[in-house]
Image 1 (cartoon, rainbow, N blue to C red):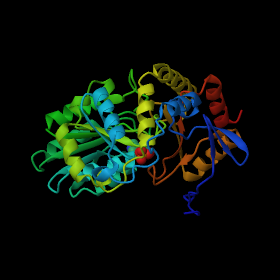
Image 2 (image 1 turned 45 degrees about the vertical axis):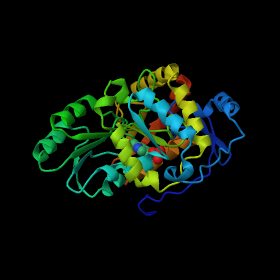
Image 3 (image 1 turned 90 degrees about the vertical axis):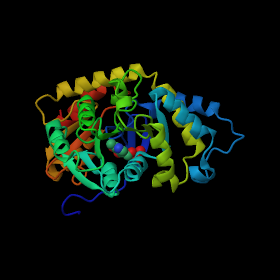
Amino acid sequence: MKENGLLRELKTLGRNGIYIEYEGQRYLNLSSNDYLGISGMSGLQEEFFQTLDMSNYLMGAMSSRLLTGNDVHIEGFEEYLSELYGNECLVYNSGYHANIGILPALVEKDDLVVADKLVHASLIDGIKLCASEFKRYKHNDYNDLERILSHNAGRYKSIFIVTESIFSMDGDTADLKRIVELKEKYGSKLYVDEAHAFGVVGESGLGCAHNNCLTNRIDYLVCTLGKAAASEGAFLICNKLTKQWLVNKSRTLIFTTAAPPLNVLWSKFIVSKIVEMKKEREHLAEITRLLRNKLEGQPVMGNTHIVPIVTGSNEACINLSEKMRNNGVWAMPVRYPTVPLGQARIRLSLVAAMNRKHIDNIYESIFDF
Ligand SMILES: Cc1ncc(COP(=O)(O)O)c(C=O)c1O
């Protein structure tokens, strides 16, 4: 792995808002998913701690939700999300747990899963745990998706389409409206992962599906809380029967300790703030436009706050990452197998707490002014 430039190592970092500290140096952090800049809003953390009732133990749930780990906090959080989205809600301990625990519980042997070629590793792992066959359509290519659906309709009991709404490594968006139309035309089911859209997209930050009034036409909508929400966990928006089924069948819900009440309370607190963070979302869109305009003509992908610059080889990617680091910007190389071979890239994740000056710094760090 080392010879091929693929060896990964853990680094001990200090985090401080939009900066990280490493070996005594401070860097602008372009590799976090804290898209709204919540981790730097220290007042929020203080406000939250003042809401806590310390007479209850909040640090751990001590058992699975199906044993004694389910409490009023987690139920209250689900009810709150359920009202926001207008459907039932089921909380998981992480997006990874959701993605590897929902699909295998729903998909049966005589079903088919059809996923976008670029879905996240957690979705691939979930699909691999399904007893069914699995096909992939070309990234965001809905003619290809329709080809697969029309060819296979009637051959399987159910067909599950799987996509992300904003793709984590390409920074582009799926056309959810088109996918919903196809799923309805072919009587399929649809699973959408909004990990990189939750908090960021829409008037109240509830993601691409909500923003396009599609929530009720998507069977399984997963949002994660570890990215823009600066917390930990995930939730599924689905119908009542699906929720009931998953409580009985989803192994990552059943065979794991429930999230600590402290974490659940923070998640609920922060989501209630996120719905009001319109200004931050607008600013993020503004600095995204600014950076993308500056980078016009460069091999940049996508159209969102995730701005990947494709370098091709792993070596070129590592070199660019090192150059940026020498210029005070922390942007990790993303290499195979996270992205396809030969498509190594620097992935710049913008954060609403950055300003125009930071965007200039990023640009200059790439071109070594
Ligand atoms: C699209 C997508 N889904 C799910 C996950 C996993 O979420 P979590 O970090 O909450 O486990 C990620 C994390 O990188 C992701 O990018």
